Amino acid sequence: MNRQKKGAYAERKVAKEARADGWIVKGTGDAHGAIDQIHVRLGQVRLVQVKGNRNGGPYSNFPPKERQGMLDEALQAGFEPWLAWAPPDRKPTRWIPSKDWP
Image (cartoon, rainbow, N blue to C red; front, side, top):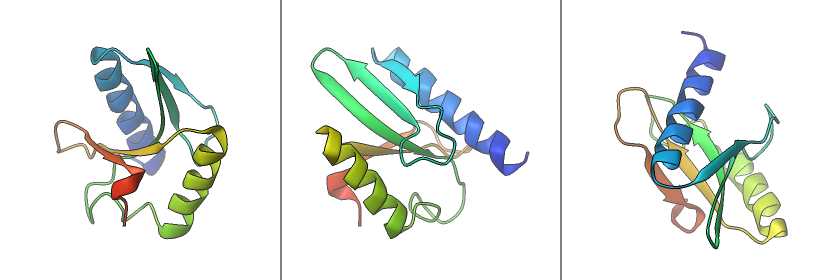
């Protein structure tokens, strides 16, 4: 499976899990943007970056510069960003709020 297919798989997995938990999920359509998905439910909004890499942990493909860009964009809108780490061999998705990022 190539990198694009792995990323799409992880995004579908995260969206399915979030919907099962009562969230409305919309993709941003910005393939190279800081935010992959927007999750909404009564009184809550999550701006989500999805990572599905198997090796190296949740931050191996989410370097500091990318994390800062996502923080800047999310905070400009008044929302806290989240990292959804969903490697193919790990269940369930690990949800990491930005306050817990290194």
